[in-house]
Length: 252
Image 1 (cartoon, rainbow, N blue to C red):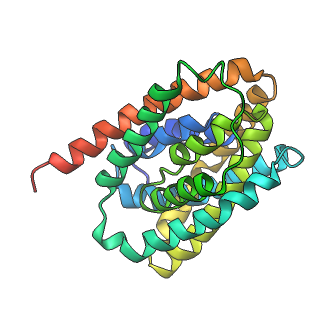
Image 2: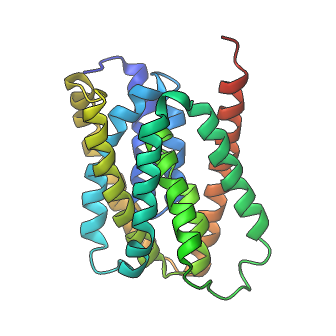
C-alpha cells in the first residue's frame, strides 16, 4: 500500500473527479488519470483506479437502476468489446500519450463543432454505424488510458437523453467495460496486492463523491446539465491534448 502523503494529495481529488463523473458529470472523470500521474506512473495509476471505478459503477448502477436506456446499451456494447480486444492486442505498440492526444482532439473538436448548434438541434437518431465507431474508440482508449468517456459522449450527447438516463446509460456501458478490463489486467499481470490495498484506502472517498454526483444530476434539467458536461469535456480535451503532446515530445 502506498503511504506517501503526496500521493494522497493528488489521489483524493482524482478519486473525487471520478466519483462526480460516475455520478453523471462524465467529463470530470477524464481529469483523474492526469492528476494521479503527477505522483505515480500512468500504468500504476490505471491499475489503482480501476477497482475504484468498479465500486463507483456499483453505486451509480444502484442509483440509476431504473434510468438506463437499454437500447443504447445494446447498440454500443459490441463496439466497446471490439475496441477493448483491439487495445489488448496492440497495447505494447501504442503509447498512452498518443491515445491522450487522440482523445483530447476528439473531445475538444466535438465540443467546438457542436457548441453553437447543439441547443437548437433536435435529438439525433440512433445510428448503428456511429454507435459502433465511437463505442469502439471508447473501448480502445479506455483500455489504454482510462479515457473512454469523450468518444462515447460524441455519440450519446447528441441524442439528448434526460440527464439521469444519460448518466445511467454511460454508467452501465462503462461498468461492463471496466469488468472486462479488470479481467484483462489480471491476465496481463497488472493487478497487485499493493495496488489493491491502495485502492481500498481510497474507496470511502469514491463512494461519497459518487453519491454527491448522483444527487446533483437528479436535480438538474437538461438545459443546465448538458452545457456543464460540454464545458467539462472541453477542459478535459485541452488537458489531454497538453498531456499527450508533452509525453510525445519529451526527450527519451
